[in-house]
Amino acid sequence: MGPQVKTKWSESKDSLFYFLSPTAITLLLGYGLILILLLLPLRLPIGAYYRDIMMYLDAAYRIDNGQVAHSDFFVAFGALPIYGFWLIQKLFPNAQPVLAAQYSVVIPTFLLLAVALSGVHQRAQQLLLAVMFILLALLPSNFYHWFANSGVDGFGIYNRQAGLLLYVLVMAIWWSLSPKRFFVVASGVLLCLFFIKITAFAGAVLLLVYAYAIGLIRIRSLIAIGLVLIVAAAILQATTGIVAGYFQDIGTIIASMDNPYSQGPLVRMIGHVRTQFAIHAMLALLVIAALSYDRRTILTAVKSARSRPYKAFRVLLRTRSAALMVCVVVSLIIESENTGSQAFAFLLPAAICLMTLSPTRNWANQAVRFLAAAFVLFIALKAVDRYARITYAAIADQRIDLGTPDPFRVVTKPDILSQANSWMGIVHQPTFTEALKRGHEFPVPIIRDPPEFGSDRIESQVFHLLSIAEAAGTLRRSTVSNFDLGNVAAIDFADLFPLLLGMQPVAGLATVIDPYRTMSPTLQSRLIDRWSNVDGILVPRCPFTQMREATAKLAKVILEGRRLVLITPCWDLYVKNDNPKVQ
Image (cartoon, rainbow, N blue to C red; front, side, top):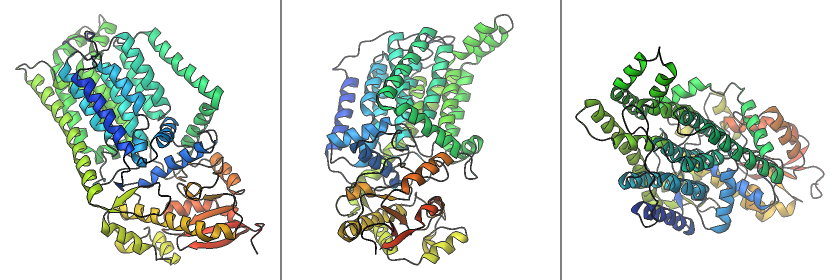
């Protein structure tokens, strides 16, 4: 446990992890449920930004064709979830893609959780920590402000995975594991986070620095953890070259931040506080209550600061309020950089530790326990609400028939499907252009708040999948035989046409093209070079969004001199004039 007494932290007694204990059985049941969900040919309701699952499908298809992540194609996050997704697809070919992505890092995460739980000596706390972890791990959904829909979220998956790993690390800190257990947990968590999301890795490093400052880990252990990371990275670099490519992709993202659409850290943090005000207010009250609980220790430390500053500082750091504030600050930094996650859920181990304090009549003690329990309940209810919505929609909604192959495996409400199908016939391009000029994006007739044709709109997600399936079907039926196309590539946010057409993917392209967040001059130059050699380039015509307009500008130079072939109302094909079948 974290601080066991009022003035200092004490290491909990080591306890054996019994394989027949309720906690162990709970973990096995959770893992078994994951296996069952991956085995079943499920169709889940389409949710906000579902198109992002195309990045995983595209990357797995590239790996299947011998390409290496970061080395042969750009990835906007670490490669561990991608290779885990690829492996799950091999082992469970019927797995729903969002579930396959959600559970792609489940094996190392569950193993680290088991090690961390073995250091929690009270079985009730151990069981509660395991149950809350499984509740979060199974849920393919975010806790974000505009997701009132009933679908699974295709984006923020790696943020959810990073949150689960941070959950394990926070547990290790608050329950003061034995040095050996803490070393195993910290090494494993940092190694996984490094190859998932670098900002979450940075947050974990800050937590590790705090653990060192309060004496949970020694300097030699920190050096050993660093050596583990260096050796693992060196082996991967020597065998695959993936690490150098990873740093290059991180550099691409950093270089892409220098554009008028990027928001500074402060703006993002303020925006996050605004959209997640309830949970921020709850955490603020919990911090205030914890400070009140530790007030005597804090006052004593402040009085002795002049004579013994170092000792006073260590005493302050070891208080529950300091530990909580460090975790909250790290979570604020991480969450403000996320556009989707199970927000602040990895603080649950700290809250569970606080809610299990020995009860006294002290009002501060009671306030801490009450607010911590309220935070745990708040997160649990959020998760249960999302489970209920997704389960009901999966049963009641209508299947979206996208032909064969159909890697998306989704359902949606009949009225949404009807609305999306009605857009398929709208081909008047000036309508889209005029809407953009007026500051809005298509479809104008059904503008709601927000007014953009945004990817959080379920109708837009369904329409996007329908248009891709229609274009791929047309290419399979006629156009491929009419032209000598050895490969194709779409100039869009994500490209799944090589997979849908069974063609060899072009090396050097990116799994995601975002002109506002992932488009540095270096990557743009590389993409143009690769696109120029592609036999057939697909360009979306509808809906004519701002992102697609910006992406089309990047590729304008390579479309000149090619022949335009109208595939569908929403997709154009540009083939080389020297194509043998071009007349």
